[in-house]
Picture 1 (cartoon, rainbow, N blue to C red):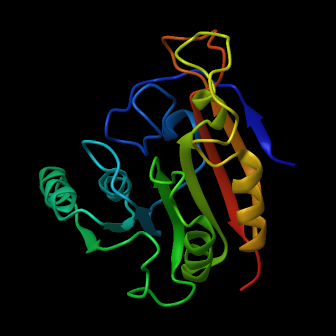
Picture 2: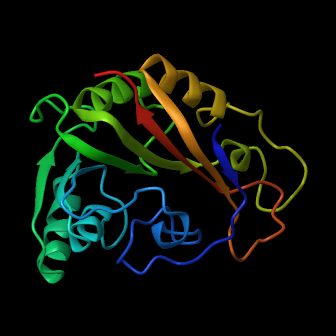
Picture 3: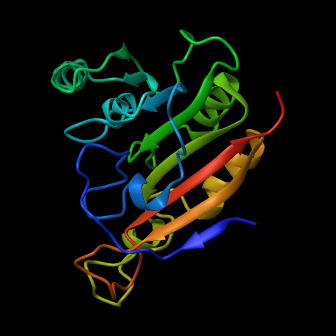
Length: 209
Protein backbone atom coordinates (compact mmCIF):
# COMPACT_ATOMS: atom_id res chain seq x y z
CA UNK A 1 0.00 0.00 0.00
CA UNK A 2 1.24 3.54 -0.69
CA UNK A 3 2.67 5.46 2.25
CA UNK A 4 0.63 8.63 2.77
CA UNK A 5 1.75 11.77 4.60
CA UNK A 6 0.55 15.28 5.33
CA UNK A 7 4.02 16.37 6.42
CA UNK A 8 4.87 20.04 6.95
CA UNK A 9 7.61 21.95 5.21
CA UNK A 10 11.19 23.12 5.18
CA UNK A 11 13.20 25.30 2.82
CA UNK A 12 15.69 23.58 0.53
CA UNK A 13 19.39 24.22 1.09
CA UNK A 14 20.81 22.78 -2.15
CA UNK A 15 22.33 19.72 -0.48
CA UNK A 16 19.30 17.48 -0.90
CA UNK A 17 16.72 16.85 -3.61
CA UNK A 18 14.15 19.65 -3.36
CA UNK A 19 10.42 19.30 -3.95
CA UNK A 20 9.73 23.02 -3.61
CA UNK A 21 10.97 25.96 -1.57
CA UNK A 22 8.26 25.65 1.11
CA UNK A 23 7.98 21.89 1.57
CA UNK A 24 10.07 19.09 3.04
CA UNK A 25 13.10 18.09 1.00
CA UNK A 26 14.75 14.68 0.66
CA UNK A 27 16.42 14.97 4.07
CA UNK A 28 12.94 14.59 5.59
CA UNK A 29 10.99 12.57 3.01
CA UNK A 30 13.70 10.03 2.14
CA UNK A 31 12.07 8.87 -1.08
CA UNK A 32 15.24 8.85 -3.20
CA UNK A 33 17.40 6.69 -0.96
CA UNK A 34 21.17 6.30 -0.89
CA UNK A 35 22.51 7.80 -4.12
CA UNK A 36 26.17 6.88 -3.79
CA UNK A 37 27.36 5.28 -7.02
CA UNK A 38 23.86 5.38 -8.54
CA UNK A 39 23.16 6.60 -12.06
CA UNK A 40 20.42 9.21 -11.73
CA UNK A 41 18.41 11.33 -14.14
CA UNK A 42 16.78 14.72 -13.52
CA UNK A 43 13.90 15.41 -15.89
CA UNK A 44 13.75 19.20 -16.08
CA UNK A 45 16.07 21.38 -14.05
CA UNK A 46 14.52 22.57 -10.79
CA UNK A 47 15.90 25.04 -8.28
CA UNK A 48 18.73 27.55 -8.10
CA UNK A 49 20.95 24.59 -7.32
CA UNK A 50 19.29 21.95 -9.51
CA UNK A 51 18.50 18.54 -8.12
CA UNK A 52 20.99 16.94 -10.50
CA UNK A 53 23.75 18.90 -8.73
CA UNK A 54 22.41 18.02 -5.27
CA UNK A 55 22.38 14.34 -6.24
CA UNK A 56 25.92 14.55 -7.61
CA UNK A 57 27.15 16.03 -4.32
CA UNK A 58 25.79 12.88 -2.66
CA UNK A 59 27.90 10.66 -4.87
CA UNK A 60 25.53 9.97 -7.75
CA UNK A 61 26.51 9.82 -11.41
CA UNK A 62 24.14 12.55 -12.45
CA UNK A 63 22.45 13.22 -15.80
CA UNK A 64 19.94 15.98 -16.58
CA UNK A 65 17.74 16.94 -19.52
CA UNK A 66 15.96 20.27 -19.98
CA UNK A 67 14.51 22.10 -23.01
CA UNK A 68 16.10 25.43 -22.02
CA UNK A 69 19.66 26.18 -23.08
CA UNK A 70 19.75 29.06 -20.60
CA UNK A 71 18.69 26.81 -17.72
CA UNK A 72 21.40 24.33 -18.66
CA UNK A 73 24.00 27.11 -18.71
CA UNK A 74 22.99 28.17 -15.20
CA UNK A 75 23.06 24.57 -14.04
CA UNK A 76 26.57 24.12 -15.42
CA UNK A 77 27.70 27.04 -13.26
CA UNK A 78 26.00 25.51 -10.21
CA UNK A 79 27.72 22.19 -10.88
CA UNK A 80 31.08 23.91 -11.27
CA UNK A 81 30.57 25.84 -8.03
CA UNK A 82 29.73 22.58 -6.25
CA UNK A 83 32.77 20.91 -7.84
CA UNK A 84 30.74 18.03 -9.27
CA UNK A 85 30.28 16.61 -12.75
CA UNK A 86 26.82 16.47 -14.35
CA UNK A 87 26.03 15.28 -17.88
CA UNK A 88 23.57 17.74 -19.48
CA UNK A 89 21.28 17.23 -22.48
CA UNK A 90 19.06 19.82 -24.16
CA UNK A 91 15.66 18.54 -25.26
CA UNK A 92 12.12 17.61 -24.37
CA UNK A 93 11.87 15.62 -21.14
CA UNK A 94 10.66 12.51 -22.96
CA UNK A 95 13.42 12.67 -25.60
CA UNK A 96 15.59 10.08 -23.89
CA UNK A 97 17.03 8.43 -27.00
CA UNK A 98 20.55 9.18 -25.76
CA UNK A 99 20.00 6.56 -23.02
CA UNK A 100 20.00 2.80 -23.52
CA UNK A 101 17.38 0.57 -21.93
CA UNK A 102 17.53 -0.14 -18.19
CA UNK A 103 20.56 2.00 -17.28
CA UNK A 104 19.09 4.49 -14.74
CA UNK A 105 18.77 3.78 -11.00
CA UNK A 106 16.54 6.77 -10.18
CA UNK A 107 14.64 9.41 -12.17
CA UNK A 108 13.53 12.67 -10.53
CA UNK A 109 11.07 15.16 -12.01
CA UNK A 110 10.08 18.14 -9.86
CA UNK A 111 7.40 20.62 -10.94
CA UNK A 112 7.81 19.88 -14.65
CA UNK A 113 4.59 17.94 -15.27
CA UNK A 114 1.61 20.16 -16.12
CA UNK A 115 -1.73 20.06 -17.93
CA UNK A 116 0.00 20.13 -21.34
CA UNK A 117 2.50 17.34 -20.61
CA UNK A 118 2.12 14.10 -22.56
CA UNK A 119 2.45 12.11 -19.36
CA UNK A 120 1.80 8.78 -21.07
CA UNK A 121 4.80 9.25 -23.38
CA UNK A 122 6.97 10.62 -20.57
CA UNK A 123 6.23 7.72 -18.24
CA UNK A 124 6.79 5.16 -21.02
CA UNK A 125 10.20 6.61 -21.85
CA UNK A 126 11.22 6.81 -18.20
CA UNK A 127 10.12 3.20 -17.71
CA UNK A 128 12.32 2.17 -20.64
CA UNK A 129 15.51 3.71 -19.24
CA UNK A 130 15.02 2.65 -15.60
CA UNK A 131 16.48 -0.55 -14.25
CA UNK A 132 13.95 -3.12 -12.99
CA UNK A 133 12.35 -1.98 -9.69
CA UNK A 134 14.11 1.41 -9.93
CA UNK A 135 12.15 4.47 -8.85
CA UNK A 136 10.59 7.48 -10.54
CA UNK A 137 10.12 10.29 -8.02
CA UNK A 138 8.11 13.30 -9.11
CA UNK A 139 6.50 16.34 -7.52
CA UNK A 140 3.64 18.40 -8.92
CA UNK A 141 1.39 21.13 -7.54
CA UNK A 142 -1.30 19.25 -5.65
CA UNK A 143 -4.39 19.09 -7.90
CA UNK A 144 -6.62 20.29 -5.05
CA UNK A 145 -4.53 23.44 -4.59
CA UNK A 146 -5.70 24.66 -8.01
CA UNK A 147 -9.33 24.49 -6.89
CA UNK A 148 -8.93 27.23 -4.27
CA UNK A 149 -7.45 30.74 -4.14
CA UNK A 150 -4.95 31.02 -1.31
CA UNK A 151 -6.70 29.84 1.88
CA UNK A 152 -10.24 30.71 0.80
CA UNK A 153 -12.35 27.58 1.47
CA UNK A 154 -14.68 28.38 -1.44
CA UNK A 155 -13.95 26.25 -4.51
CA UNK A 156 -13.14 28.55 -7.44
CA UNK A 157 -12.32 25.99 -10.14
CA UNK A 158 -13.36 22.46 -10.98
CA UNK A 159 -11.00 19.72 -9.84
CA UNK A 160 -8.84 18.62 -12.76
CA UNK A 161 -9.65 21.61 -14.98
CA UNK A 162 -6.13 23.10 -14.82
CA UNK A 163 -3.85 20.26 -13.65
CA UNK A 164 -3.76 16.47 -14.06
CA UNK A 165 -5.76 14.78 -11.31
CA UNK A 166 -4.33 12.20 -8.93
CA UNK A 167 -6.44 9.63 -10.76
CA UNK A 168 -5.02 10.62 -14.15
CA UNK A 169 -1.46 10.45 -12.85
CA UNK A 170 -2.11 7.09 -11.20
CA UNK A 171 -3.68 5.59 -14.34
CA UNK A 172 -0.83 6.86 -16.53
CA UNK A 173 1.69 5.25 -14.19
CA UNK A 174 -0.20 1.95 -14.16
CA UNK A 175 -0.47 1.89 -17.95
CA UNK A 176 3.29 2.50 -18.21
CA UNK A 177 3.83 -0.47 -15.84
CA UNK A 178 4.74 1.41 -12.66
CA UNK A 179 3.56 0.68 -9.13
CA UNK A 180 3.16 3.56 -6.67
CA UNK A 181 4.69 2.80 -3.28
CA UNK A 182 4.92 6.28 -1.70
CA UNK A 183 2.65 9.31 -1.92
CA UNK A 184 3.10 12.48 0.17
CA UNK A 185 0.58 15.34 0.25
CA UNK A 186 2.59 18.28 1.58
CA UNK A 187 1.30 21.41 3.29
CA UNK A 188 3.34 24.64 3.31
CA UNK A 189 5.10 25.61 6.52
CA UNK A 190 3.56 29.08 6.49
CA UNK A 191 0.05 27.58 6.08
CA UNK A 192 -0.08 24.55 8.39
CA UNK A 193 -3.89 24.64 8.33
CA UNK A 194 -4.23 25.26 4.61
CA UNK A 195 -7.49 24.30 2.93
CA UNK A 196 -5.61 21.97 0.57
CA UNK A 197 -2.08 20.54 0.29
CA UNK A 198 0.24 22.50 -1.98
CA UNK A 199 2.46 19.72 -3.31
CA UNK A 200 2.05 16.08 -4.29
CA UNK A 201 5.18 13.89 -4.17
CA UNK A 202 5.00 10.40 -5.65
CA UNK A 203 7.46 7.53 -5.88
CA UNK A 204 6.65 4.79 -8.38
CA UNK A 205 8.65 1.62 -9.00
CA UNK A 206 9.29 0.12 -12.42
CA UNK A 207 7.60 -3.24 -12.92
CA UNK A 208 8.88 -5.70 -15.48
CA UNK A 209 12.06 -5.44 -17.52
